Length: 282
Image (cartoon, rainbow, N blue to C red; front, side):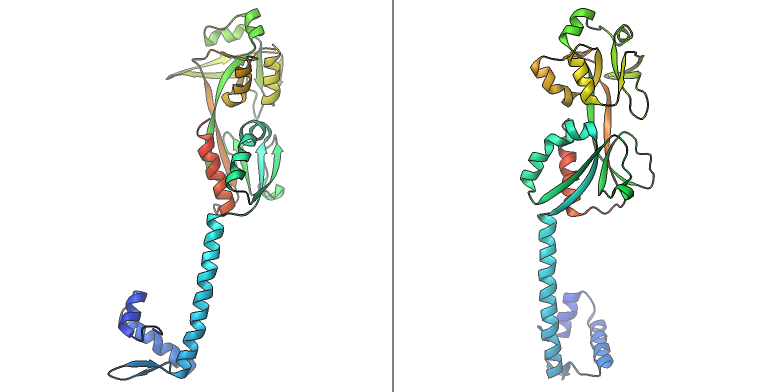
């Protein structure tokens, strides 16, 4: 109104009717006991008090516009610190190699990372979010699906030379298997080929909760083990591991980000979006 000196134009800019806009002006004048506009049948002009009030309000609007622009820049160029809890193997072998690319894109974000074999207590551990593999049982958490990781069976060439390459999943019963012990003992391996699903009860002398050590044992001829395909990629290229039953795969391992609130600050959102894009290729 201070710029146009037209009730009709000002009300149209605000998306309200002219009578409604006029009532708002009258209420302000009544509340303060001061006239803001001189009105005649032909023109509208500002009083001295109205002009002073308009200039102060205009400065406030300009400051708000600058503040909004600064906030928009923070959102588009995020800066800040993230404290994250990640399972040990997931952090070392799947997430760890991705940080270089992420920080190349977002150099003003820093991390405090807690690698743990247990599910994080977000409030107690004071982390912004936690990555978890498998089902999230804490119903109070806000969960965002990040991706999933493929699995396969692997063994060393020397082990397969001595014991033979299994021809079908049931042959695994006759082999030394290196089993993962997580929230439950994984002595029953599930394998899938297209739409066909089978389960095999395996056995062996090693049960452990470290995919990294399982890979080391397999490379040292201790048996057949289930690994994520990304973890086995290096040994496959180096020839220290071979794929076992290559037409069969293990169930994909779902990865979730767990948060105390559904609100995601800009630094958290860009990191999770980055992980979703990269993990979808695993």
